[in-house]
Image 1 (cartoon, rainbow, N blue to C red):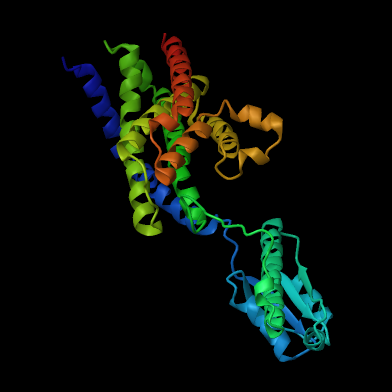
Image 2: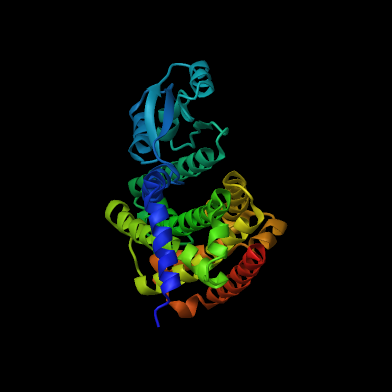
Length: 377
């Protein structure tokens, strides 16, 4: 039988949301803005590192080496300098991040069959850029050295004798081009869902208390569980719409491949929402003002984002932080959403995370609902 009281309460809550169009617009604009920022800006794909070259040899051999670094996608040749002092100045001002220094006599040494040395200086103030530039510089140098060694052996008719002792054949699964957006965009679903549902739920209920309308609801025949469901239901719908929005924008704009089942993903989104909504409901029971609720929500959300593996790998964290991350529901949901979208796995591969989220859902929502009921009483 249709619960008229519950339907009326949900309808009333929708009216409250529609009457605040700015918040409603921000609710749907925020995921798109964050997708743009994290999809394009928050990336570990280091490319076009500004490079300065100090060529003291100025021979065909030195120009070939410079071309080897220029054609690589990792470096962008911005400056050709005439002294190491100029390099220091460019690095100090941040105009370049790396410098290739070719000493005089480089071409002669190679022509004689001797080993020639070059210097590659890197600005280490930014470890992410520096580590990528260091790896790329070594790989490009080794590739050039191998090419020269093969050419020398070929000149002697010994090409067949040159063979590396180990031949490593690499294969990259699920994300062959190592695109950071493929890793970040799916995780945006979890972050945005937790952010919106926790923040909006906590402030919506506190707003009723500030306006004095919560007392009016209490004296009506509405049961406490109906009040909880009626307040949360509109935000569940908004959360699902945001999820679909992220998936559509991610596929159309960033070409994210969805390898798994979308219905399974939406079902597990619903499971995760129970925990997020429970956190928001619990915050509402300990807050007296909307400002207090917002601060409490941020206090809960920021650590969970950093300890969920959204930005930084959990394996790189200290052991005590990894232990704390096990009580963060977002940690398990990120494994789920990345597994379904990127790897195309099914529920059989995600059952540990599903069980963990189910436990969190029961404990968090149950505790929040009981405390909310006591607060009403």
